[in-house]
Amino acid sequence: MIRADVKGLLLRFIKEKRESYVEPSRKGTPRGEIIGLSLEKYMASLFMLTSMNLKRISERSKVSYGLIRKWRTETPFKGQIEKHIMEFTPLFIGYQFKRWAEKDEVFGEYYGSTDFPPEYDLKNYEPNLFMDDEIIFYGSSLKKELFEKLLVLGGEIPFLLVYPAFINICGLLADEKGSRERLLFKVLDGQQWGVGNIADLIKRAIPILRNPESSESERESAIGWLEGAISAATIQNRAIGEVKKILK
Image 1: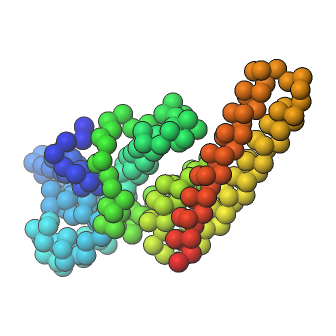
Image 2: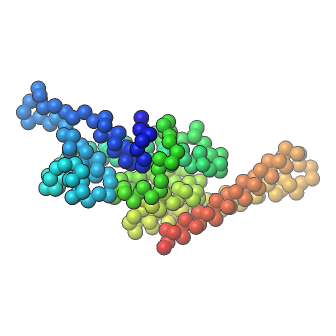
């Protein structure tokens, strides 16, 4: 359950994980056996999802800077960070899908909530919890994982690669030159798909509208295809604007 008094998707995630964590007890555990992370260590693993530097993380976790540096080299600590990232990723992507479907009729028509993969079907959605500017506070490991997952989805769902909001989010996550170049090539593939899709709709519609023997229902379908082509062209024009941002 996401608390309603905390804003920011990542901040909310961190706060909920902190509040639900039960610190393990050494009582009854044989000496030398790993018992899990202390509360301070667990909190530090959560802060590693952010762009905070180690000094700031040590202050927030109330431990020394040297201890934070030591923890970073330990397998259990690194594994916990990875686990947090794997848990946050579907939450992040599911939230984007949900907000696009809620705010954009075109996205909702093309990719409705019933089409969401189960892992991205966000049940508890709060509008305006996430803002694009929040991404600047994400750590590089988290951004990399989110970026990679989104690119995979773009390959599976070509529409996303011509959808401006999707391109914008990917652009914000791609903070390295190599990532931006990969995104650019993916988006260009999407533009090619989009042009082909628009041309196909027009090719299907024109013969029907020119044929005087076409039925009324056939003509209505053809007009719907043309309207779809116009809508797709509008979206693609906006997507090109996002592509220009990547090139800058």
